[in-house]
Length: 461
Image 1 (cartoon, rainbow, N blue to C red):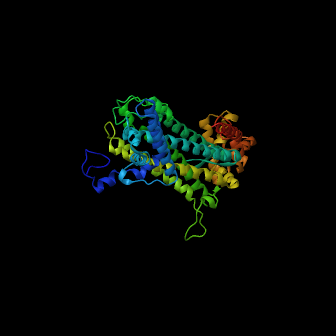
Image 2 (image 1 turned 120 degrees about the vertical axis):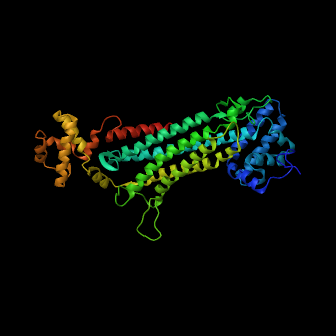
Image 3 (image 1 turned 60 degrees about the vertical axis):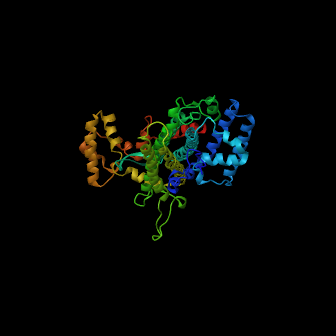
């Protein structure tokens, strides 16, 4: 008895292990909407070109709509024996409309079919990710505007460096996310070409209209080379690369939230909505949402690395190895969407401790740079000399156990006689941040202006 799928070439059924390793329906069933959309476009084109009859195309479209509805209502039975989404749809179509279903596969192959479906899927994913990232930006900008003048410590080497504002800190992530959105937009632009009609690898002798199917599916144009069309997976690699960089940004912020919410630091508090307790320690409030955002980054990195390894040694054109291009990518995109939503939720939920932030901003002699700048601007001192003088003043304050703005003027004058009481105007953390008015600086006026610009920009998208 011949194999039902492969007809006369094969006379025996595959081994059970072969069936198990070869099947992909558990993964590519998620492409059902894209597969049906591409099939409808293909059938319409075949009819327009006189390759199949208009009546057959009408029946195919009707049957595909029925299948789409069945799957949407979870009334469709996916059969592992049929391997993949393409054969499952075609088999059911045959049950619904009879022999006309067999005409649907004219002038195409599962090679260009899956390449088209997956491109459509990734394009849809990019659109969803972009919307989620825009929502995260809005959450960040809203909080930045609320905390444009909330002073907090800025860090280098995780040591207190200079005072900044919380609003300025949050806007830094708005900028990062903007670059993420740009990378996804670039990936979308490059992937938006249609493989459909490339058939197995060499194109087809049927008089098809690839521009028509490309237009029907929202692609900019058909891919120019049939070999490239069926074998390219750059679009997955590039989108996963963008996802990996985005997840780095989310993970960095998640790490900050973990640090800030620690009782040892206590700069921010998360409510019960985004924390968990301990099974043994009743007092615990764990920032698990942030920790899981941090951890899921590894899954996203892994998906990118996995597909890079799959693709690195493949000659043209399609190889069965490429069946492994979907599961990791789908998991990564799902993880990224969840992480973005969790981060947006935490941004809206977190309550900053403004008093503790201000105290921390003044710790560690964080206005020492302001003192050095004052020496340069007021006394015309070369910066390197001002740096040295400031270092001696900081050492004196440290020895006395006081903050810079509590160090007696006489002590400062003992190091640099020309210092006047006017110096105290630059030693407070509030005045420090107010003075940072250069483009991109942390001054509250800058933060308010930038936040309002972002709100307008986001309202247009």
